[in-house]
Image 1 (cartoon, one colour):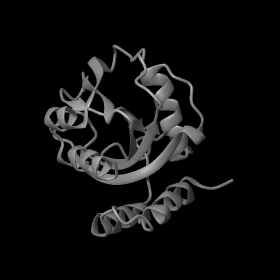
Image 2 (cartoon, helix red, strand yellow):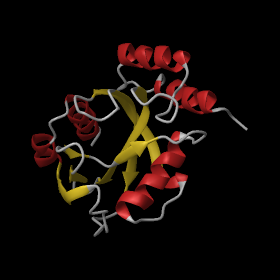
Image 3 (cartoon, rainbow, N blue to C red):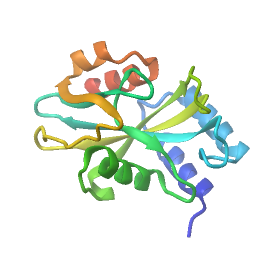
Length: 179
């Protein structure tokens, strides 16, 4: 069985072969990986986490929500649990946040970003691993009201205008450039 370090390293190795991934940013991810204490349970201040983008390529729409705890619009995502593979995190978070069952075959790695968090919460920095969750059509997700005030499908342009996090905007812009 792979260690958590090996699981995350495998994702980063894959990222190194993707032309749209910022290589200077990727170097920061590898440096952080070498520091150990990779997940929130081991290091509440500074850890790896995931985001995923539910999207329909045909209509160029994606699903984002007004996140209660952070107070900003975000794509869904969550913290990686101890021992968990990042893809397992995404599959778990899709179930928890959108009440939708998927397998690892439904998601694919896409990009990375670093999120500096200025809040009264223990988290200060996330090393975000981004995944795509492709859907054939817009789905009426039963999103969790404990996480989001409202969540909805919207065009990429509207989503970019709603997102305030620079890293999130950058990833969504990269996605729109692949269409």
